[in-house]
Image (tube, rainbow, N blue to C red; front, side, top):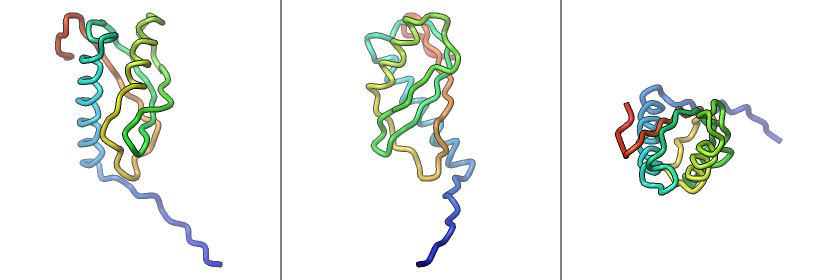
Length: 108
């Protein structure tokens, strides 16, 4: 039997940042298109994992918006979202800061 300790694939900073930017755009696009969250004003941080097929899992509120109802609406919307699959070597779960604005305003 041969055993080899294989180092995990490490992403370059540029690759990681490119994926974070893509993920942010996809999540905001989904939240702004979702009937439950499109008009909410909120700021929260969630921890989440992204499966190989792009589905989100293990979505947990790390810092609440201050409203349990809003937090639950955002979690529900995220669990129905599908995003681009993560690149190999991306450490998960990810901490994601999310903001929603009333009347469909663009986040700052």
